[in-house]
Length: 575
Image (tube, rainbow, N blue to C red):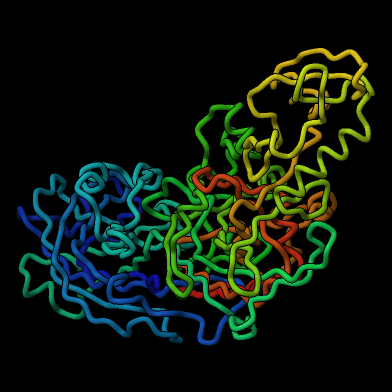
């Protein structure tokens, strides 16, 4: 899981009074040598969320999640300008591994950090920390002011080797400490924290404590206790007009609608305040050195593009704000965890493009019969058919409604014609699980169906156009569960309080900020409690999945979600 509290850093550094001083001011004590030593202890927070609280509310990280490969310290003068960078290999002590806890501090480490090459006569006043940083991050952050560091965006999250995640990037925690000058992420340091020797810096009185948190959010999907895996019955459905019991097979899951970048240091909005009234929920937790909401880099960005469908994506040809995954990419085992970047937004954005703007769990599934054999289904005109029966229904509809001289035939002998049949039709992918029918290559005829009638030769494309009609929506449009493929879209809830997503909520009260989203160092634990509905059809398993509001409505029949903390968030789902 993610860290609970942030890493503690013990460092002797800047003078509190320096907050109002210029970096070149002549305030005593002054830096007299070419080196200064500071004793730093780091503590990192267990992952957490402030949704439906769990007892206990935090969760220790695993050994891989806690692994520290490098530690970098950035120091700033009282005016926020850059002062120095130092790195250190720290000794760590874990409070626990992969277990629930009441403790906000997950791991503590420390050591003496050496500052070299300071060019000012005064000590730095602020310090930030980045762990498991790439060389590029270190180079970029060196020389950046607090304001510049606050705006620094990275792709770094963790290292993924096959299905194993390691080397989690961590940074100083952000919360409303009442001092905007700190960027809300820097620790203040005092002159007495800095010493001229390493031994002096080790004195307890000189220790500086800093807190760090992972940039990643953690998500786990598991089976709920009430889900009967011995009888995977979804329910009884009319298929080809006959009551048929359908079953599910869960193949895995994955995260969709994930952010591409994140701020190195969690960003909060300057207009927010620590009071609960500012966002509608208690987002700031200064006593635990952490906060439960943040901005992702495209937060409230009116230019950010969230596609409505694959068709919309193909038309716009624009860079999407988030990354989307295909059915074949849903390969996380149930019971295992996956990680993603922070993704939050305002209700003004979500009310327009909710389904594709939130991070969600996609549960990969198949429709099967009682023996586990795959059942391919087509949802046509709100009724379920097998594929051949779907084609037959389409032709029945066409011959019943087409003008007499527009019915489509094949020539089987001189002056001998017969109506087209299902073998003349194949499906064509429209995207998003939808297909339409078209005629195979060949020569077709229109006529009245009598031997003495007049027939006009037409192409396969012309015959297809007659079959699908002139409306914007093809007459043969259907969603195709090819090979039984389907998914369930589960938007990740950040808070349980308040009304959840429905179209009506958006039209009336809007959507409260903070109900949906994923925040760094939070552990979202979802349990699947029941499956009583078919999921969304998948035709092309390589096509990325762009969720629509229809997907969400399916999910919101009897949905239950809790949010847990690393700060854990638990979410139970009835599908």
